[in-house]
Length: 156
Length: 128
Image (cartoon, rainbow over all chains, first blue to last red; front, side, top):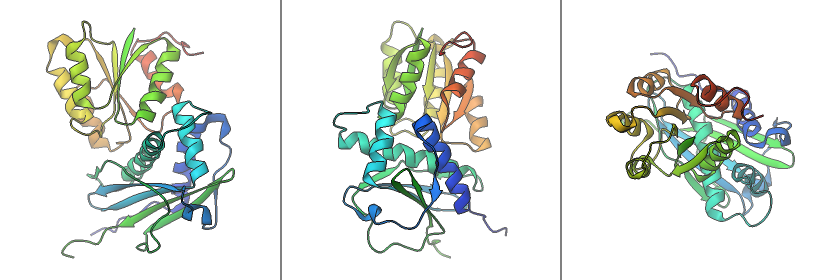
């Protein structure tokens, strides 16, 4: 049986940079590896989770600091100013999580399926399962984390 | 020329609608496959093109394409899948079901415009 090779942190960084560039256009400059940041523990942090089911089963989580999520959502909605409803912020972060998870799925053995994204407002729970891959990144003054968290195999 | 954007994400619908609007399309939006079918059935004339997401609640994009292709009144409508689903087998399934083109998210405006040009739906450089 061949071991499943997961994307590396650098693969994830390149993917997220491609997604950010497609959303932010000329306003996006660089996405760099970063240290874990307190901003993802702030109350305005936003996260999404998408489940991949297949030869590799697990969750792809995306966590954004509040200001970063706001910047991306405003770009997606074409709304640079004014109040952005929480529902729109959730929609945008869910779609970003969906795009990232879909592209990660494409690098995994076929066939696999994607769940619809679930969005969470507020900081991550304090205790997280050990992820298979965790990528801490920063752009401008914003923080993002993408994790690939393998589910425990049923009956293994 | 009219277009229909079918995606359960309002943000993605807005991105695609803005893009199509710049090219000159009159754009309608549907939140999933069921909504799209209802709008298509109710319309006097089918749109020239529908951009369809794959993963949506109620009726997904693949099943929507199959439903559209079963209806002769929509036979001239161009269908473009715009999705995060990038597995080769899924691309083949979508094209076999009746999609004319397949775009994987994230995409650039140029990529969508190029596909529409290839399909003969817009003249070259329409968005410039």
